[in-house]
Amino acid sequence: MRTVCENMKTIRGEAAMKMYPLVVLIAIFLGGCSKPDMVRYLDNQPPLDLFTYFQGSTTGYGMIQDRGGNMTRQFVVGIRGETSLENKLVLNEYFDWSDGEKSTRVWTIKRDDDGLLIGTAADVHGEAVGMVSGNVLNWRYYLNIDVDGRTWKISLDDWMYLQQDNVLINKTRMSKFGIHLGDITIVFKKNNNGGET
Image (cartoon, rainbow, N blue to C red):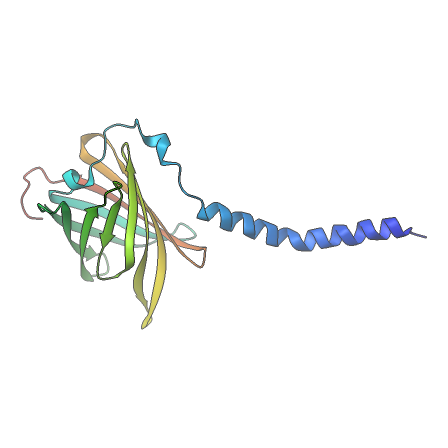
């Protein structure tokens, strides 16, 4: 016959097993909410200045992948960037999608007194807030997208990495309620002629 202590150990073990998925979910949630360690990129070269990089004409080649890694859409985006005396960068983006859709977005980006980048656009919920360190930019924001006639507020964790020869790699993780929905990858290249895209 099992002792009371053995019964208690079994109960505690079963309770622990029931709690385990919850503990894992909490750990994932807390890990996802932690701030990135941008200091590690401080000495990376070449240094990224978003205002300088996107001044003039730039072309980006991108794709969207679902959470299983399957490519679902491709696009080319032409960008015309202009800076102003008010220390603002305006990006006019023109998207040409592989399924024939064409769309536009206008970003207005400014630096605040702490050196953070603050971005707004018509389909961005609130503001995008970002930080640059070395050759890396990370900013996070919510994007309103239309899904079957309904508007979804999607969380974007957006990273840009400047490489040699003015190549800028952009990786974005999309999620909703902490659930990974998919990823966006874009490779930007400066246009040599500096003309219109």
